Image (tube, rainbow, N blue to C red; front, side):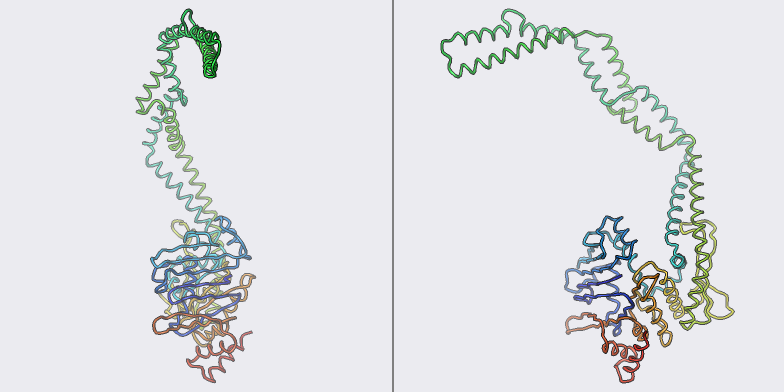
Length: 556
């Protein structure tokens, strides 16, 4: 339910704060006063289209915020949770538009996309515009209205999803079937290449290890000869490094008095002697274990040759062969096995069956709801001064199934007795179409999941007793729907509709000669009577005031 609407620097609005409650609220005022500006701003906060022209002249940006109570709206709460947005008893939708045309959207203070703002807004408010009856000329509108009345939106969404899944797999099947020969040739080539690489059994990092071992084995003689020479230099006999260090230490110890610097020298030379002894021991162990292995060298070189040859064949670096093997395997998996086409055909058949099962359930719901919807609309048409009009909802089976099911829905109408029902656009006049639209909107609104309904001058072309019926219907919608307290906001020019509302707001346009601005305030008691009188006949008179008092007194 809409609780609060804040509008700043929007077209002719400087600053406007509005509080809304349950029931039916009407917005009235002189023609051209800007009654629809409020709903335009609300539509913008719900993700509607915006532009720089909507920013008040001289302002930097327009800012609109709408606060809703969602404590009794589990689907909105679930949507917020799915989007990882803040959840509470209330939700605030905010939209800003800069003078440069840039737009920003927020939900509970967190930046969101316009698609997200629109997705949540559609769950909170349903806006019926004065031109909406034109959409009744489109069959997709007929289907949408029928599904809403049948409470089949979830099943319709499931039908669309199953159809998409089926068609996606079917397109994949056709692609695979059209290139079956080419895919088969590619599969055989991949299998051959993979067998070669699998036989090679090359592991990650193997090439680096083999190249290092090959260099060591190939230079084994030089390494061993150098090792012997180094061993002799370190501790091989007279004059070696170990002996020289020993003599140096003896000279230091023979000195009668050692300065601090000489003590430090002694320590460093003694440490060097220990390091030399350890190096000599390690070198000795290396020489003892070192082997000349021509056979191993031959094995390593043969292995390297096989790897280099495979790398040249596939035109990659030797180290890239394991990655190439994985890549070829993935491509083979994508092509599938030889029976992939058959399995994919079987999958398509199962998916089609699942779609037709779901679509069949949807068809049954539509069939049952079509008669009830037509009956309810016909009853409303009688109250709207079209007693001889009869609406029927025809369901025509499609030659080919589509995303919305197995049939097409179309609203037909007969405006005179004995006349067969025909499409709306070929029978109904503009005024009749407007009343048919209102009747359908009133009927479908009673089953709508959306807590707030907005009507923007849907009563155009209606007056007299019919206007009183419209006012009564809108009040009923505002009192209760689906067992919950309802909320209806309506822009109207009819006194009969305004008098039936639970509360009434007056929209006024002011000007100081340089600028114009729109103001809006709730009317109380005598103010409301005067506005109803003005709507009845211009300037209030004793007669119109008395009539207005009578109209307000009829409201239960």
